[in-house]
Image (cartoon, rainbow, N blue to C red):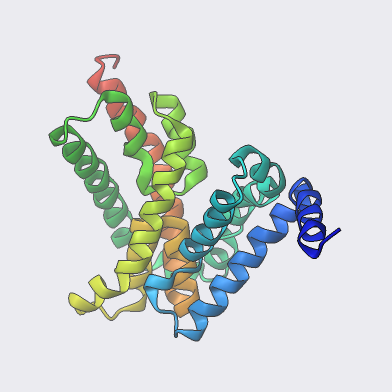
Length: 244
C-alpha cells in the first residue's frame, strides 16, 4: 500500500467522524483570527468571513455534502443562542452608563430598524423580487436566530435568511470602520452602537475587540434591534394584509 493510499484511508475515516468537522471549523476560525490580529484587526480580514471561506473551500474541494458537515458542526450552531444571551452580562455590569443614554438609544433603534426595513423592501421592490424573497430579506438586519424566526413567521426561507444575515454582518463589520471614520465619528459609544445596529453579532464582536464601551453599546443595539424588528416586521405585515 502506497503512502497516498494510506493518506486516503485516513481521510475517509476522519471525514466520516462528526468531531472532525467541529475541529475543522474551530481550527479555521483560530487560523483566521490569528491572521486578523497579525494584520492589526484589518476589517476586510474579518475572521468569520475568512473562516467561512476556508471551510467552504474544503467542502467544495473534497465534495462533502453540507448535511454531513453540519452533523459535526451543529454544536457550534447550538451555542449561537447562549452566546447571544450572554451579551447581557456586560450590559448589566455597565448599566449606569447605558441608562444615561436611554432616550438616544431608543430613538436610534426605532429609526435604525425602520430605515433598514424600508430600505430593504424598497430596493427589493425596485429589483422586482418576488414576495417570498422579499420576506426572506426583510429580517436580515438582526442576529441570525431572531432573523430566522421572523422569516419563518412571515413566509420567508429561514435558511436563506441566515446566510443573508451573516453576509450583512460581515459587510457591516468590514466597512463600518471606514464609514465611521469618513464621517469623523469618534465617540466610542456611538461607534459601537452603529456596529451593533447595522451588523449585529459580527459587528458586536468587532466592537468588543476594539473597545469595552463600544462593545457594551453594540450589545445593547443588537439586542434592542432584534426585539424591535421581531415586533415591527410582523406588525407591518399584518397591517399590509389588512388583518388589523
